[in-house]
Image (cartoon, rainbow, N blue to C red):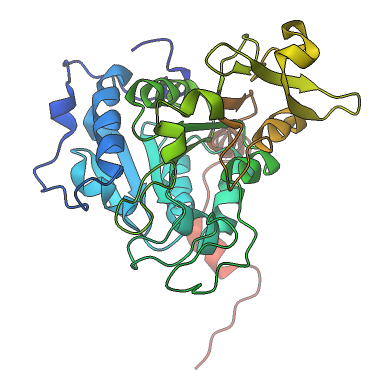
Length: 350
């Protein structure tokens, strides 16, 4: 097993060589033609052989939504669970089976609406699982209602006069919960997607990866300016650890730190390229990564960072729990389930 995937060191290594084909199930992939989910599925299937983990030791858990069909198309173990509860179910699996590599597939509606509570608690606990959040800014499965990430003024079937809700920024939510690994990528950028997945897999603890995904039926082109070669360079800020944060075809703009500690975008002609900060994904204080997440403009998509925002070491929940159980067995001996159920006060009812 490659040492680069530290978080999988407890998962048995495969003794056979696996390819992307080995991770494709015999089920017909049934998303709308042109859906961004196809690109994500192909990216994940092409990446998994690198883990060196037997497919029998990998589990995909999903909630409800278009993205949640994902487990059917993976030739691994999988569970299509209930709306918003995938992080909770995956947490139970990861804490009870440290020999498994557990992945959560969810969407912006599934994770951030009914599932918001489960998501933030999985993140704060730092359970050893990987969460892929597909964000298309719409409810696709239920035919085009606005979602928690839809921009203000969004006209949909459920908001015919425009949404009044201020949208969630999933990266900000995750960092606010002090997630130990937070990243963003794009469905159609296979190289970037796979690289982010590599870094997420190498992380010990909960890794959240937001994936900008296109719903070509109910919200087509939501992220198009970030994909169009004519505009992408001027909108996308590619975060690379240890590198100055710059963007534009000629690195004409970058990110600078203000006297009050906040971050803003500035032109090199205004501040000089030496003023651009160097990205450090390992900063312990989450306020730095949070400030990066607030640079993007939800309507115009200007100044949108992609890449790894935060990657820090924190105690892993499932490992700490195992240590507690082992300590209890060592110091108190084996437990008595029947005695625990009876408790100290019991009655016999005739």
